[in-house]
Image (tube, rainbow, N blue to C red; front, side):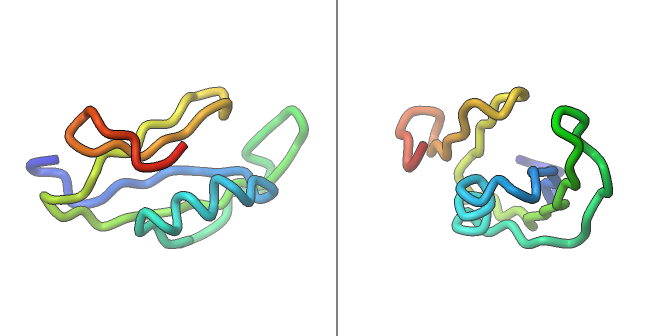
Length: 79
């Protein structure tokens, strides 16, 4: 993450497991995007995390079927 100061992502307002995961990884809610998702129509919460060079990576699928936190590209901390 050299040169990158923060990460920003959107998550469905109803996706409480993903919100808990991201919050545990250090993300904070900074806003809301009304009607961001279309099927079904739903707001997105905007989350941001300020980066530290020692932070683990977060991997997430685009279709919201999986999310995991990995460290050093090998060890899954949670999924």
